[in-house]
Length: 134
Image 1 (tube, helix red, strand yellow):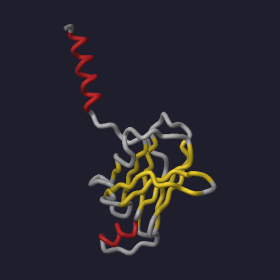
Image 2 (cartoon, helix red, strand yellow):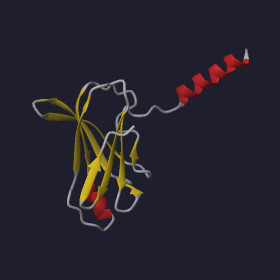
Image 3 (tube, one colour):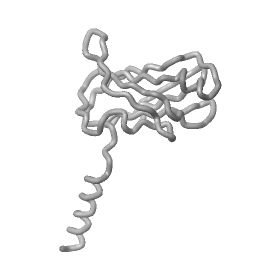
Image 4 (tube, one colour):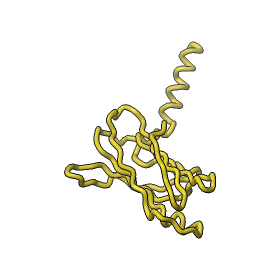
């Protein structure tokens, strides 16, 4: 076996064994502390029509504030309107803080199913912001 064939075989093996990332991910950062939002409950839903949503999955942010497994890696993403709900009140209660927003819902339109969608949420007890990440 040639060196390039061995290299190709190793790369193929690594790609097969590496866990696939959810096609939609999120990240919670606590702006008031400069730290990740750990163990925030997260739910993702897809609009089914006439403003109604159907739950796809629930998860929780990890120690880095990320939710890499928001959807199963094999989930077939379709064009449409999605909604992510972050349960912020229980998170701030664990920190011993009050907050103005008991939860934050981010509704976004997914137009390109072949692209990765990353939804960061920057929170503090009395404000939040978001953007489409990469």
